[in-house]
Image 1 (cartoon, rainbow, N blue to C red):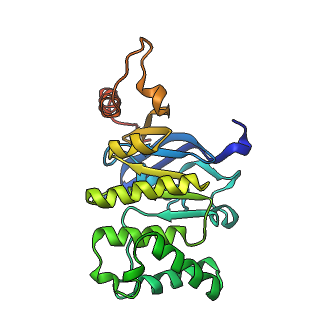
Image 2 (cartoon, rainbow, N blue to C red):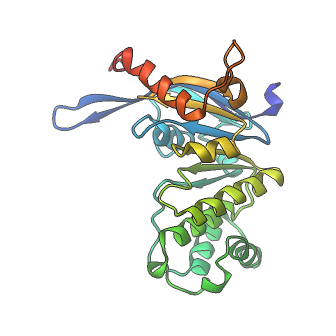
Image 3 (tube, helix red, strand yellow):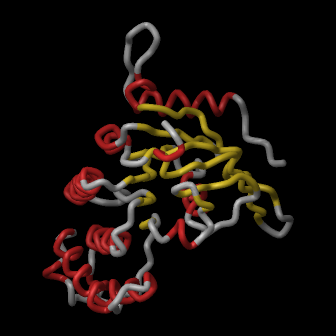
Length: 260
């Protein structure tokens, strides 16, 4: 696919944190690279501590990379023009608990530079879409985990972005909440949105994603179309769970990533 068909280009991304009094080096992302095509649902997989959230935070400009580059729609991801077309839901979205969903979306609307009229129209549509119209004036402190996740999704969609980045969007949700989020992701994709989400819930990934990348200890251990990754040369197929575990174990055999 040509560059015109790419939504995201990540190249040789590296990030090392320095922890504790002695500033011990802890590699988080070690030369990761991948692309996301326009109009697809792309899965960023890996066990806890694999570097998924760090990678996404670098993409969103929340953490500065030590090396490498990220482009969104062909532009440097650090630029405003690139990020204005992106909606982001962090793994742990912290909202002021005394705000209502309406007040929260009004606040984000101002950050996006939306007019009051457009923001009010959009917030009504989104609260209806995520099933919170009846709770629009209820303080967030009274919301369940699943309801807060829906508020976070409404926030990510407020500016009607082309590209959605969702960090563990179904983590901690009950089966009904997971189904709601999965169905919404499919609906958004069918309407033309490109979606990248991280997860370690493999059944959701199998249902939603056409392509994936698997990280382990900050390194890329597999990438490609899901169907191709699961099919062996001899015609046999394995489950995503089997592939996930096998790649993680292969990476462990090679030892920890370098700290320099």
